[in-house]
Image (cartoon, rainbow, N blue to C red; front, side):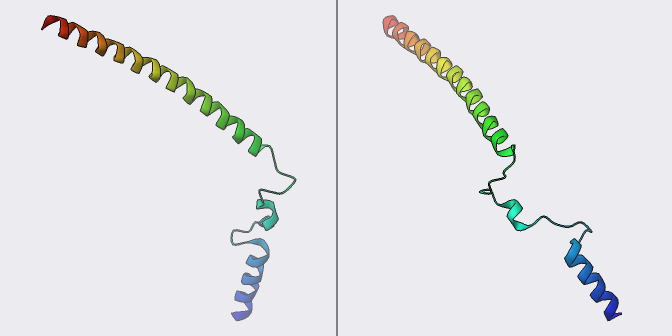
Length: 82
């Protein structure tokens, strides 16, 4: 029984707990020179998101400006009525 458990444990050490081998720790190093295109893709996506947010903020800025102008107009009208 011990021999069987030892064989199973050794087998899992070599192949991992689910039967597949794990990549070496160096494969997870972000500073590795052989990085894939995922980093570039992610950076491009972040730029696109920031651009979309800038456009949305521009719309909010214009809306707030319109509301401010309407509030000023209403304030003047109220002053004129009194």
